[in-house]
Image (cartoon, rainbow, N blue to C red):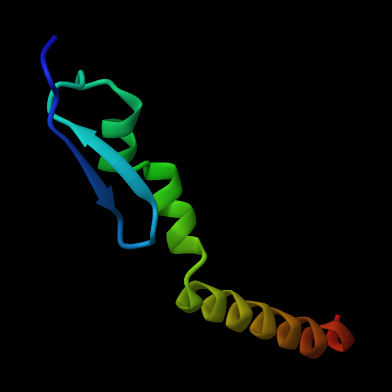
Length: 72
């Protein structure tokens, strides 16, 4: 039986992966190590900059409703 070289890899956000040279290219570990685009988008949406931008848009919208409401 052939021994596989295995290495533990830790991502920047603390997730752990097991990388193996003998694993097929479609193994779940390698796919997870390459990164999930949906998770990347969700990570970006959770950043403080996006939260600040969403808050700013909400405040501007509220001010517009309060100012334009009595006019209409």
